[in-house]
Image 1 (tube, rainbow, N blue to C red):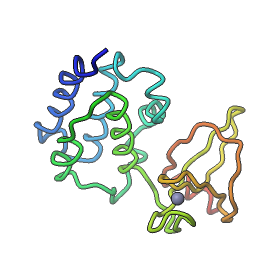
Image 2 (image 1 turned 180 degrees about the vertical axis):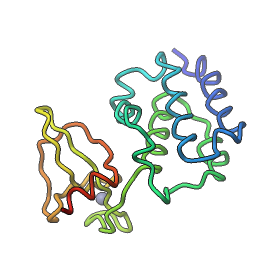
Image 3 (image 1 turned 135 degrees about the vertical axis):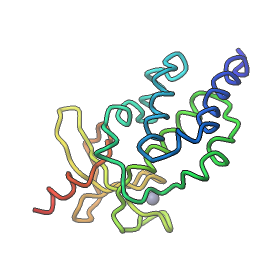
Length: 173
Ligand SMILES: [Zn+2]
């Protein structure tokens, strides 16, 4: 089966997001625009694709509570960046959307990954299958995880969710 059959239409619609500057007015609006795009196309963004890239979790949060002050992306550059890539499949597009959403909500720890040079660990919430929540540090590049004391975190692993400022502040008191 040829991927090309459906991708141009989906891709065109994705790139249209970037043709309308209103969609990129604020990080919040941009976040919502990407989420709505994924929601609109369940045929392409299947449950397994969403699960593979953690999109369901990113779509379920209220971005108001998560978007950081200085996200690691520039709204003015997005059109020439992700908006101009010729994605070959819904899967690679989902991966990029996920990483773009993460860029807007990631709180970094100022601690470097012991294995990936120049890669700062990010705070994430690990929700295990039995429902217990642990905030840990994760390298988005190699997947290294450690607890807040700096020791390797070995699991149990479940869903990885973003952490917001309020949740982090609670930890400190
Ligand atoms: Zn790493």
